[in-house]
Image (cartoon, rainbow, N blue to C red; front, side, top):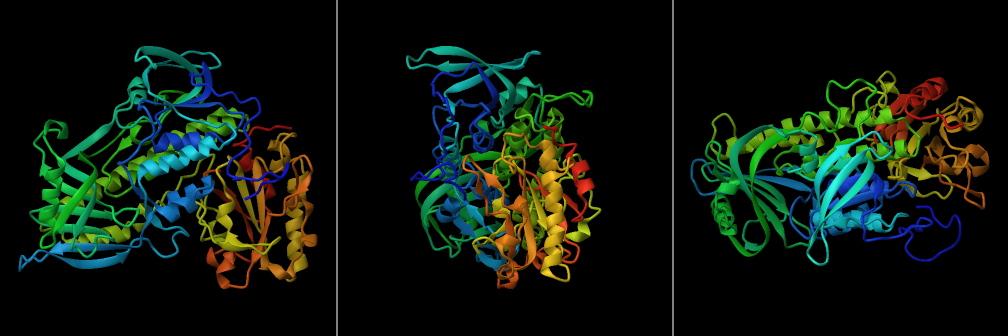
Length: 635
C-alpha cells in the first residue's frame, strides 16, 4: 500500500482525500456519467470501482429505504476474495468470515433405514488453486464493505435510497439516457425526479425494471420444485454442523448445510414439496416451521432444535437468462455502441445452492466497471463497451448449465433415482471444484484476449483466465508478498515482464534494460503513446519486472530508472516495481507457474485481473500492435 506521496497525514490510509470542489447533496443530480439502478452486491461492486475516479460522476439509486441488513447470499468463492483484495478489504472478510475447508457428504442407510451416516469427505477447494479460501459471509456485510470503499473514495459516494425507477428513454444528446424515478419525500409525498446519464446500468435484481424497459425477458425453465432456506441458531447433535454438508435422504429430500460466520449461526437449504404444473411458490403458504419440520426429517436420527430463525425464505428452482446484457439488438451494426446495460440477477437467475449467484454477479460488474471508466476518461474507444455482453453472456450461460445439472443431481439423489446415488453427487462436486471456486472462467480470443500462440512460455498462466498469483519477494525492501496483489481495482492495466535468465545476472539485466528503454522512449511504446502527458507514467499501463535471481544478488543501482519512476509533486521514487526470488522454493514464480526461465515472457493483465495476452519477452512490436486496438492515442 502506497501513500504519503504528497504530504504526511495520520489516520486511516484507506480514506482517500476528497476530490476538489466536491459538494454533497441529498438531491438527485440532474446529470451523471453513470447511473446505477440497484444497490445490491452487483451495483455496489460497480459503484465502488467507479468511485476510485475523481473525474467520473456516478449516481446509484435504490428502491429500499436503506442498506440491506440481513439474509440473502452468503457464499464467497476464492476468486471473489481475490477481487476483494483488489478493493482492499479481503483481510476484513477473512477475519470475519467462516472458512469452508471440508465438504462432508451424508446419506441414508439403504438397508437398515437407521437414518443418515457420513459417506464421504473431500477438501472444499483444490490445494494451490488460490491463496485465498472459500468463505461464508452474509451479503449485507459484503455490501457494507463496498459502501465503506465508496464513502472513503475521492468521490465520497453514497446511494440515493427510496427511489424507484419508472421509465427510461433515450435521445442523441451528450447525456442520452433519461431516467424517470419516483421518490417519497420527508412529508410522505411521491415526487418525480428526472436524471440524465451517459450510461445506465441495471443491477436491480430478478424483477429488473431496466430489463423490462429494454424489452428483454428472462427465458428458461422451472423444475417445479420449492426449496426453503433459513439462517438459524439451533442446538443439534448432528456432528458436522460446523462443516459444509450435503445430506441426501431418499424419500425425505436433501439438505445443504452451510456454517455461517460467528461460530454459532448456520444456514440450512431444505428441499420442500414439489409444485404442481404451473404452480408458483407465492401461491402456497409456507412458514418457518415448515422448513424446520422438513429439515428434521432429513436429519434423522439427529435432531435440530431451532432456538431462533434469523431469516428465512422459500424459492423455486429455475434457470433463466436474457438474450443480451445491453440495449443493442442482434441486428445492430458493428459500430453501434451500447448505452444501457444489465448485470447480475437482472440478466441471469438460478438456484443459490452452488453459491455462484452473488459471485458471478459481482464479476459482471467488475468486468464492466473498468471499461466504463476507460471510455469515460478517453483512454479507450467506446467500442470497448461491446465486449461486456460478449464476455459475460457466455459466462452466464455456463452458470445456467452448471446450476441445472447440479440441482437436478441433488433432486434425483434425494428421490432415490436408481441412476443417481450419493457417490455421484460427491464425484460431480469434486470434478466441478474449479468452477465453484470461480477460477474456471476463461475469456475467448477478442480485442481484449490474445491467442494461445505463446502459451508454452507460461503454462501456469493461461490466456483468458485470471492471473493466478504466486509468492515473490520485492527487491527494494525484501518483502515477501504475492505478485498478484499489486493489481488493485484502479482501472490500470499491468504488464508483468518476466526477465529471461541468461549466463550472468548482468546479461539478464541488459535484456530487461532493453525492454525498459523501449517502454520509456520509443514512439511505439504503449507508455509513450497512451499515457496523457500530465498523468503519472504508470497510470495507464503499470509495468512490473520479475528478475529470476536471488534478491540479495541484485541492487537497486542495477535497475533501469524506468522501473524507479518519479511520482507526485515532489518527484519521489517509486521503489515497488521490481521483484526477485527469496530463499524458499515457493518464491520461485518461474517454477511455480511454469514460466520458461531461459526465454522469459511478457504477461499483459487487464484491470479485472484476467490475462489478456502472453508474448515473448522481446515481442515489443506485437505488444504495441495488440494494445493499439484497446487504447486511444494520447500524444
